[in-house]
Length: 365
Image (cartoon, rainbow, N blue to C red):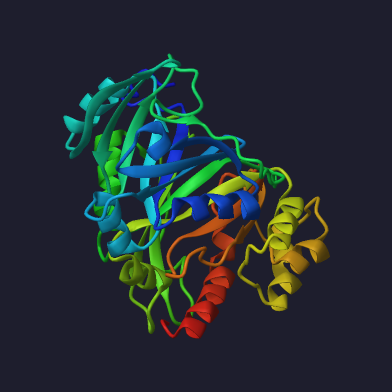
């Protein structure tokens, strides 16, 4: 940790989705992705306002929350956006200091520092607003041994799906509106002390029809990486425009989940019904000329539609799901890094053409 890092972050604490039916969403992520049930909050725990289910795999913790009352912020969020990410929570050593340091640099407060206690100890939480209706919660949990947070109890249903090899959140991508990328990149730099790792313009990320621009922001120790996308002008509507239209503004576009064996992970996910984008066979005819030697069998990767890219430090394997909800908004990336620190720039054209084929089927291109 650098001495001048005013916002030290240990990692991602959890990602919370506001959804129309938390019970069913939690079951889907258990059955389809292999997440394990760990905690619950609802009527049985004295919560009359909302119900939340918490699932975990590796270091990834997802929370699904549904309103129990009609006129709530949760329902307003779902009405505006459909099911989507509300909270990206960071695990920090000092939630009060994290709040004070970011607010004094211009962050809009979302939650004043609050101490939560129960029989397992105490947690301090605070929060700030970021792009769209998304918020960051700072979680300080060194003095806590419970299943998740105070107010939650252990959730131990009979159904247990086998895990699929997912380890941690590699990065979380946000989509913002026209000409907003630089504004939010500056926000993360000035307010949270993040650095820009890399940027892509419409020359890097474009096809015959659509384009976008992106900047990747990272915290000091590199455990939080947040690419930010905005639309760029093209002949037709880009996937970022489609997202913003259907989501009703800026929001989290996808989570990239890391695995040590993408072949086994993707096979397992496909067997359980997770749908992925398909890549033309022509991509695999030339990809090895660009990438060079890899440990995996190319025909196996091709059969699974896994993409390959390299940088100066190694190579990576990645694949993107179709949207996991009815609105064409949120999806997942599965990524395995074999040394590479980059984000698959060499795959952008093939990936975007694949997305455009899906957009064409939806009539939104």
